[in-house]
Length: 249
Image (cartoon, rainbow, N blue to C red):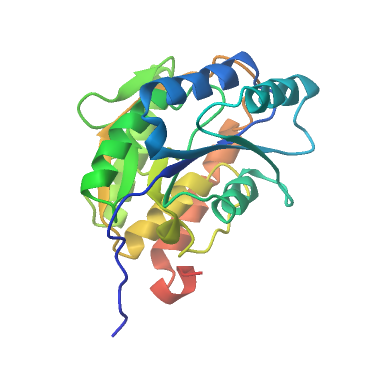
């Protein structure tokens, strides 16, 4: 029988932020995290960039590094292309016991991290998901059709995976680093958040949802087109019918 290892305590969280062309929203995201969270709970702000990251964005990042706050801001250049690679490589570099990834454009509300930390202190081994479909969560600027499609897609996931988790498509997640690295990261694109959520679900990890409001991006150009979202169905079926052994790292 496989022996499960449980994390006994929360030590600190590393906040991972992939950035391409965001400037003011990136700065605001980091400032909110530093203002709303106890610095003792934050290991680092880990900003990931690639060859497409603009000079303006890099300038903001370097100014934040030079700020010399109690919580260090680290800059990492991803090796392989794609959001999936950016996040996976970051998970292998961070120093915290836990890791949370947020967007640099404020569509993942940084204010939620303080709530996630409090839950992690009580449930250090849990995977904590920001949820738009629990009481207190929601959407702002998403559009009625997109909202309805997201609701139906999540309902389909609940049926396929026999789960009560209401929002598995949102990539806003706070989890122990060892849990995050225990699965294979296959997708290079935006489906990586959903894919890894589903894999953790398949492995039986405890999942706790906290309310979060998704907001339309305030800055920068969206990289997640409608055609890319259509491909999510293939990812869902692949994860659902894969053996548990095949999704482990």
